[in-house]
Every structure is written in structure tokens, then in C-alpha cells.
Image 1: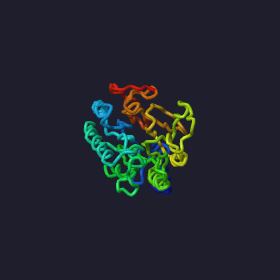
Image 2: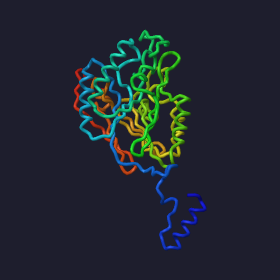
Image 3: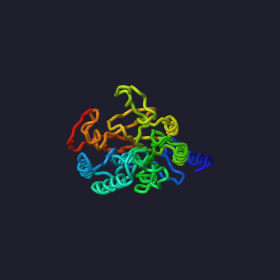
Image 4: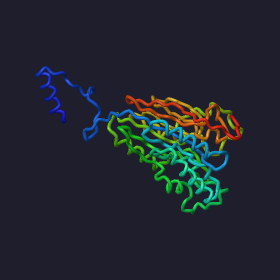
Length: 314
């Protein structure tokens, strides 16, 4: 409705004794005329499975997925680090780990959207013996199994953005980073949304975390910034002006919620706990249940009763 016709309509409404409808009282609309209001639904955020044949990891992951099946959910997002580990092992070992994960994942029985984690990148460490020229080097093995490393999708009126937070460095290591190409894509993706459209983001390495406040500073600072995204301010700036309901994160294996500019950055505990060695800094093995209700996001953490064969609690 153009401005002139809108004024005419409001004038007629007033003359007929009808309640005037102001722009602020109208529901948000897309360019095609559809409301952006979301429906209520539940989904799962399952991260850091670190699947491996050792330490009863496959048994534990199977237990987690079967517990998750009991929760009525529309779908699940895997938050990264599907396997442990493809960074520093041979192609055969990495491939077998992904095979094991694929078989175990079937127990979940839900549609899964995958987020890439640092341990999902093949052959990055020289100890793997892999060449950087290998066609499956880096993120290629992940892409072959799961598809794109960053993308978006929509569900019941909510726009989901899955980011790739893994930067592979020239000296064959990793760091938390969202590269320039992806930043440009994200800006363009968010720009297509109607005003007020709800957005939920998934990322492996946290954009915002207080993790460094919980642990002593290392005697020797790490060469690469790996516990959070080093250029997170560039990503966060793109969220401004959008209705971001929450950012779901993994990597640190602890439960944490930090609110910045009204956006909750929710880091989930890991399915693997302390890498299958017990509780991680007070967070037991588990996954996060996410509810979208009334246009707001809430979470709760579910454990599933796994007991490590070799507990090393931290």
C-alpha cells in the first residue's frame, strides 16, 4: 500500500468510525506480504561429540542420541567437532572416524544441520602426514560428508545462520576466525530479511565468551587465538539492527550464557564432557534443548547418564 492510498484508507476508516490502524500496530511483513511472526517450536543443539572408538565414546554418543530422541523436537543442529580427531591423523583414520560418526548419528532420528568444528578439519597438523594438496585437506573432507561450511535456512518463521568459525593458518594450525568472504556473505544474507525477522545463529568457536576468566592465564600465550573468534567484533557488528534471538556456541565444553547488546551468546556443554574423561569444569556430558516460544528463545541443558571409564575431572 503506497503512502497516498494508506492515508486515504485511514481517513475512510476514521470517517466510518473504525479504529485507526497505525504502522506500529501492524504485524511485520515481508516484501511478498507474509507476516514474519514465528511459530513456537523446539530443537536441539548437540555439540562436541568428539566421536572415536576409544574411551567408550561411541557408546556415550549413542546414549546421548537415544536420550535426545525422547525429546519432541523439530530438528537438531550439530555444533561442531563431530569427531576426535582429524587434525593430526592419517586420511584413513579420519575417514574411519567420520564413518563411525555417520553410523552413530542415525540413532538420533532427526534432521541434522551441521556446524564445522576445528577437529573436523582433516590433515591440518603436519603430524598427520597429509599434504596440503590432498583433495580432502582442511575442510574438504567435512564438505564431502556434510555440505557447505556456512549457510542459512528457515524454519517456522525463524531464519537460522550457521557460521564457519575455523581459520586455517599458513603454518598449519587453526584459529577462531570468520573470513572476509563469509562476512560479505553474512551481510548480504541478513540484508534480505524483513525488519524484525527473528534470527538464530550457530557457531563452533564462540563469538562471545568469558572462558578466559575461569582459567589461569597460560605461562606462554598461545601462538594462535583459538578459544574464541579473534575478529568477533566484525561479526557482531553485522547483527546490529537485526532481531537476533540468540547465538549457540560450542568448543569450550562448558555451559555459559553471556548477554551483549541484548543478544544471549549461549555456549553449550559437550556430549563428550571432558573429552570422554568425565565432567568438564562442572559441566557433565550432555546437550542443549532450545525452545522458541512467543518470539523468544530459552534453553535447558540435558544430561544422559554417561559414566567415563577414565574420569579426569577438571
